[in-house]
Image (cartoon, rainbow, N blue to C red; front, side, top):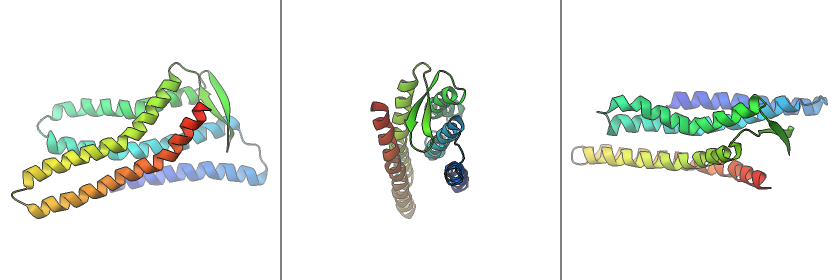
Length: 198
């Protein structure tokens, strides 16, 4: 899990540094910013972070499935595909409208000057659904890890109490990790809600 998350953070950092480098270089050299390119780069920079939030959920769901439902492996792929569609589907739908410039319009935004939005069907509803998914993922992650802890504690309570205490410490660390994801997503989501309302 550490290698996967570290690789994703490196990739997200490279994307973020490249986007900000593009803005800074164009600002100091006085070059013109290409609004469509800059806006699409900004969208990529924003949406890569959602994948960072979803990845721990996938990994913990996989661990939860193996520990709790270890006899029902044939449903795992189907369930995982449904979860990926729920978490990444709205993101891909919104990006497709913006990247392929389907019924696009521009709204003023800092940085690039304008942001691309798409007028494809259900765009606004799916955007709010995506915000709900991003807010719900840390809580769902906390619930999954609590159920994992309960399952392991029930199996090991009479035989290996130090292992149960270790699981409790791991659970506290994972709960803190889930809360960090939630806390750091509140400002951008509040900004998006304010921006969409005004």
